[in-house]
Amino acid sequence: MSTEHEQHNTDPLGGITRRDFVKRGTVATAGVSALMASGNFAYAGGTDTIRLGLVGCGGRGTGAANDCYRSSDGIELVAMGDLFQDRMEESKEQLKKRLGDSFKVTSDRTFLGFDAYEKVLQTDLDLVIFATPPAFRPQHLRAAIESGTNVFMEKPVAVDPAGIRSVMESAEMAEDKGLAIVAGTQRRHDPAYRAAMKRIHDGAIGEVKTAQVYWNQGGLWHHEREPGMSDMEWQVRNWLYFTWLSGDHIVEQHVHNIDVANWALQAHPVKALGVGGRQVRTDPSYGHIFDHFGIEFQYESGARVYSMCRQQEGTPSRVGEHIIGTKGTSDGHSTIDGATNWTYEGEDVNPYVQEHADLVASIREGEPLNEGQRVAESVLTAIMGREAAYTGQEITWEEVLNADLDLGPDSHEFGSLPIPDVPAPGQTTLNRGAKTNASSADA
Image (cartoon, rainbow, N blue to C red; front, side):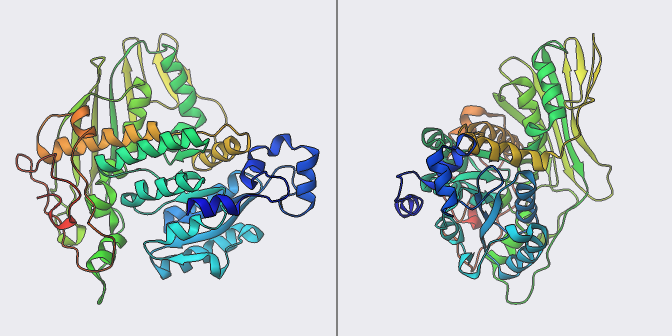
């Protein structure tokens, strides 16, 4: 696939690839301008066209494609892939309306099935969005980087240590090939967060000693099982509730706040100890994940971060961060209380759009952003917290990074797939074996 893809992008007239042109768009030479006039490069607005593909056409993927289109001129959506026909049709209908003439997806560039990502990557893309359930992210990312395609991928980027190691390898490969990887931790692209973090790193609150991070809320969507639906289809359509697909909500959702803690401390923790359980959301239709976690992360500096997340109906919401230093405190994004108080008064920017604007600009300038290693470390931090709660043990960074834990089933196909057991602290172990069937992954 890689060879065919690269060959497809080669302009036989000049020996310059279309992707090379995209990188050089802001410094186009007369020769390149001639190529534009020839019609090989369609955008005439002063820059160049980015051919975009989308893999994962649910609400998150549809929104991400629209955000990418809104972020920059010259974005064309040319290919889409998903597992399910109904999700594909819903997404196409919405994106046709939002993108107008920039919606270029034709029937021969619409793909269904577990191998849809491979077919999307064969359509001469500059950039692909991966928004499938997180379990598939490491495999999809590797294929994209091997094919020479820039990537935007939703968080989390993996659900287990095996996936994290794969993402780290792909990030290194992308660095060598000059490709961009941006992940959906949009706080990193929010000007308010960035301004606050700069001040924290410059010493505005002194040495960071501790932080409290929260993602507490009620329940989320759920799809009832329909007659004829296989185990695999039912689990994928309800992917939030299965650890092998989502990583559990501490990984899938709370990683945003955990990433902010790592950002403030400019490090990842060295160990974690925690509790968690399945206290209210106990019906088997909600899979086998926990509904609450409470984790203490300890950093090499001695700093400690206290993490709390919950998905329980009828409870108050709290989503945010509180960072405490030796000379003051900060909410991480808009205020600092210390020797010199500060409140963010800059432009209010939509970070969900800004992350795509930053990605596209980096591709066009030939200076690709690569967030792969950083986001892998934040996701592994969340996995370390999950495993501390699942096992009831103190888990170190090295233990979780090198753990023999691969939660996915042996094969991706529609059919029988029993629900894993609910993890039991004191009984569930970190090294639950090499790649196993989902039926025994948490035993």
